[in-house]
Image (cartoon, rainbow, N blue to C red; front, side, top):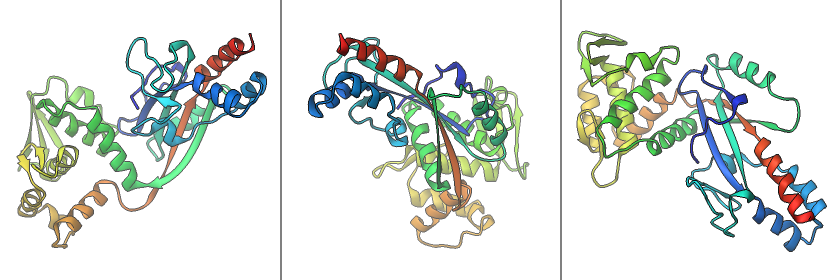
Length: 296
């Protein structure tokens, strides 16, 4: 699913970066009406009543691969990949996912309170493990980057910093930035010096881990600021830097170490609430127009 910022009622620009994800997916109403009228034998009016009450699942709205009757449409004049229906038969769902927590709860409640009080918007609450949220974040991040260009290393580091310090205006910090370096003078935090950003060793090493996770392959390892590293090379580097000892990671098996590293970067093993706000307006409008064609 691709990112979407088309819904004026779902303005999430004031939310801290890293706490919000946006999705858009298309659904083919020709496929849906065909199922209800041909396969189920319902009259168009009955099919219309059933379809407009439909509420898609979180997986249908945000899954990495769309399944029928949902599909991803990037072209200007897309056709349904299942029945070849033209654009006038397609409806769009825009979805915002907000991660629960102190940084977002007040803004989220205000956003939901201002939405129209009807069936145009759907709010879905899901409780999930922090580890899953972290891996979803990694997957979304990986899909948005050009891993063949060197600039993605800086982009990944910025995304990590946005999660670690959501209140910082990172767009200003990264404006015109050309390089990121580790600093032995900083015990914590970061410092901008000209076109370079210096990170304290713990943050820099955390960036290496995230870079590895985003770009790793079973054959060649992952690309990082320190070059291409296999898992064993990454862990050896972290051990020599004192990163593992500082986090109380005593395991010797490299995969157990990686599991602990991911657990800590994810914020622990606990759960967190996710709030999905689904914009159904285009869907309801298109269902009505499609029904008019069937009724005619």
